[in-house]
Length: 138
Image (cartoon, rainbow, N blue to C red; front, side, top):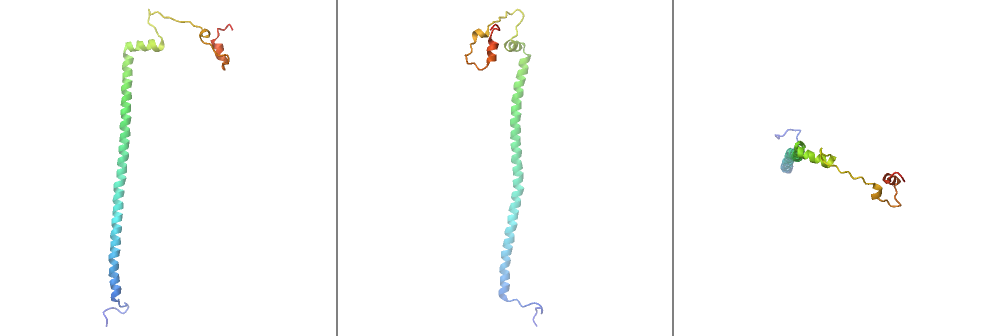
């Protein structure tokens, strides 16, 4: 008898050679798929930290710009504080901005009637302004 069992059909030589030819194709496909999955996984592992690193660099640059701006503002404010402690600067600001005078200074006050200096056109659209400029005896 034949060494093959009764239930198995005899396999002819061309079918065996087709099976052997198909195995390298399957193996090549599996190896290619494994390489593809490995490359995608490697890209995922490298890409996400790279994006995070770039985001952190942008945040650091933004924080450095903010720090530089705040340091400049702090220096400007420190100069203003130093000026506020200087009596010469305080006096100058008081005279220029607040019109203050020292004791013994001569104060000149000019009384000018605005109606004599300012003449409004006859077609002036705001009648309240003419009233404000008049002497009150009109």
